[in-house]
Amino acid sequence: MKKNLMTVITLVLCLVNLVLSAVIVFAVVPEINNVNSLISKVSEAIELDVKTGSDADAAASVPVESQYRYAVNGGEAMTINLKDNGDGDSHFIVAKITVTMNNTSEKYETFGGEENASLYDDVYKVNINKVISQYTIDDIKSNQNAPLDEIRDLCNTYFGDSSFIVSVGFTEIQYQ
Image (tube, rainbow, N blue to C red; front, side, top):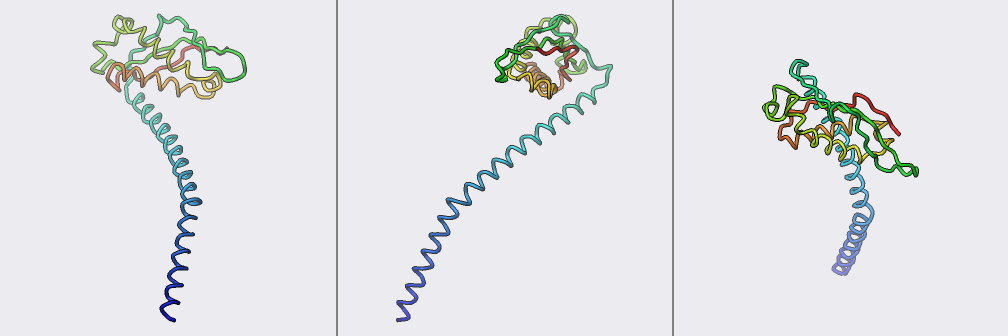
């Protein structure tokens, strides 16, 4: 009799274990995945803020006398179409854009200065159009630094030196 009772208890415990395992698989695991997704999104946002902060520190660490400002497109305004924001209108910006270079960078002799920088004016224009056209007018108005930082990073990747382009900025900007 005791042997049958032990078998029944073991069988009941196995069934309880099976039910609890099913609860874990169907209830707890999806919640853990949601939490992991949330943590990933938060960490990406933090990395972006940290990156922006460190880039700002890098720009501040380059003394003014070591910076060369180059006006893209010969100092003329560029008209750039923006991504559709769903309101049915097409939007664009008209902006004058300046690239600030670090004249102590090893790439400055090759790519910097008035004569050399103007040879790469098309590279700047293509990168500017490529990045800014991915943003809506609302995105640009709410945070101008994000596309400018992206342009800087894209240009630095192109030239192969993360310290060559210190910053990219709008000298004039109009939204439409």
